[in-house]
Image (tube, rainbow, N blue to C red; front, side, top):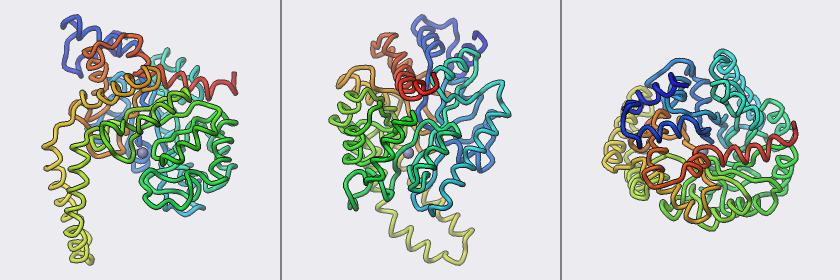
Length: 396
Ligand SMILES: [Zn+2]
């Protein structure tokens, strides 16, 4: 315990002998269950990334999770919407295989949790609890038997859709939806997930889809990695009305740290740079269509130019906590948590460049006068409540 606290203190650049305020935030952070509701690290693992060793690459690994005090990490296994149906299940199975093999190799430091009670046991043993999620409902290839298959493999949440609509759930990014929020099959998925004891994740879903899910579900839902639309009006973020509806359902919203969802200025600049660069991108692609290595070089140059402009806009931990504040003011402290999107996005706020920065959220919450109780709920208590309510009942 002291060793882990010292590591945490060393990383965050403060000594345990520092002022009372600094000591308090680290103590609260360390003793709370800190749950991150969304990372995309399994895709990196499939490309050969080993979570066991500390790395400067990517946004998380096991040593950095420990340093940042994360107790429960959701590892989302992602499959893209364009994947042919017959390839969806094998692709997700492969991600789960890779993830579980890495966890098995490091069983002295991390273990899989299927229930909130199991997560608490792992944390009590000083291990990170690993929660398996799937990002994008296309994974089940339109067959409820696949949903059950993934449940039996230990998957405990499914993000219903992604940045493009599937044939049964409309995405928030879809400007010309082919149907309302869900099809009949989509509604069957909701019922089946309720029956299995699997958490429904509404991040990425359209307003109509979220509405339908909330009307149908008999269990609390999560938005595993979404922010506040009133602060940053991006389609991925939740309106005040949606936040109130999630609270009425007893669910929880994990705040995504991606600068493009946190800061309206960043989001606007990102959109206008992408739009402005599009003709140049297209012409260069045409010009270098027979020279892949040169095209890759040009693409990297374009990207560096975009990032150099975006880096001029400061986004910091305070901006992340503004989203938490907004939800707390709107519906109270019981419905918000953390959903980093680590290893899934390209720009993180200053201080949150990787998972070792998470204690800075606790520091900022304390500086804003949050009670210890509310801080514990936000860091992980709220997610643990939903996890227990949805997933523990079947086994207990
Ligand atoms: Zn996502």
